[in-house]
Length: 425
Image (cartoon, rainbow, N blue to C red):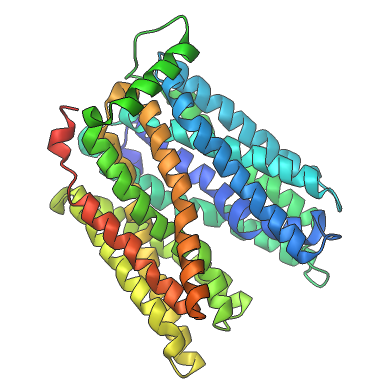
């Protein structure tokens, strides 16, 4: 926390926004909203149908952003545009997160439409928020600032989450989630997000930008086409994005599939929730540690170290079902959770700051649009690979082991990235 007070007002505002928006992921995407949708909004639908609809909604939100992000980024790189786009998507996310508190039983379609709009708003604002990293700090401080944002973001997501869990427990779980208390929880997420976004709304200034144009949309299409047809000019950037696609796919697959894998092994829901909170809390100091170690050993080397930790996680997860006793499995599951927490924040934070140093600062929104695209589409191949291998072998753990291929490919490609050469791109 001392580092936070030593920062400039713009750096501090940037970090605090990470603290605010992280609650959306934990509450609205991961923990509470999916259950609210299943138990209340879609309570009259068969389980298989409601689950399929939830999957389609999440895929739709990711696809919308993946298709729009590069073009939005090119348009946002002109003077004062980045802040405008950030505020518009922030307003979209806040509005529909709040609107979800009005959903009543049976309104499954309206619920999904509002959720897609809220998630598009959250993810869209993050494109421009990430792109502001080049404006709020220096190249030398990017690793530290990005790491502190991720670190405090983990704690920032836990505070409103625990408050909402307290409300839900007070309302009682005998008949499922208490609807009124859960709806109040959505408002808490929106208020928490808004309050911690106010400094960013006031202090963000676009210091790097392209000369103004009277036709930003047409110019955006033209620049996007030139970038795509002249990848050689930005070889190091796209080499990194290729590496990022593979290793962040592995990270995302482990996060996405871990709960289902835990249930397959017989772990109960209270244990899985406890593990989730443990990871959020332990990830806080390790994200900071990765930022400090990057100053000593280099950002790319710390990213490679994080990838190696995830390779070990994959191997341990493969061995987990072979243990004889429930106690042994539980102990190893906690060890795996600790390793995930130790590397998760660091690898995400340093990926963001390393990429920010590779790109032309005056085109940060455009290139972070590509960063978002690679991150979004990376969530597809990992779960598919795990499911395909697990289905062919008839054993889920072989599907888990297959994820190590993604980390190895990511590490090999990342080893070819030359940051010094990117400066001439």
